[in-house]
Image (cartoon, rainbow over all chains, first blue to last red; front, side):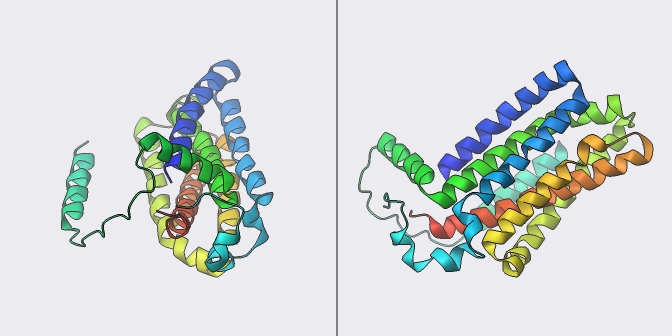
Length: 74
Length: 171
């Protein structure tokens, strides 16, 4: 939870900085195109991830979750 | 500003209103904070689901924060939007967020949580592609639809991912 929050907040700051840079160099509309297209990367990552393999995350993984490759569980 | 302040007061009252006693946390196997941090990061990186969630959140936030930084400039300077109307347009995105939050449970049930995440993330990306198409006058409709749809989708996918993570993660 915390780790993903850190990633989320950090990338937001980077995104705003990159947007400013792109906007200055290539114009605001071009920068918006780049940013809009970059969001498609999230879809690409998901399609090649374990979540794309099932319909439901919870039912597929709830009880036998300990068998998943994630070793560290406290 | 005033509305912001009032929402903070409201939020504080709600927090004070919580009367459920939290059960004490189980004994920590390792009390060192640094160690726990490392464990958390390792857990997130090694787990296929959480890693995907983290990357999804990171990429979407990158794109959204970037677009957010430029949107006023884009509306006012590039598309000759009156400033007050630009404010209205951006505020409507918040309405999209409410709709997304309200619909998230229904979407997760209808599609399944995994497909809901992929489908709604795709929707968020597609709505985002409408933003740079925006033009002056009626062309602002692209911005309105894009920003409302994208905010709704991003909020919905965050609700689905966060509720799953809450059930899935070890404390």
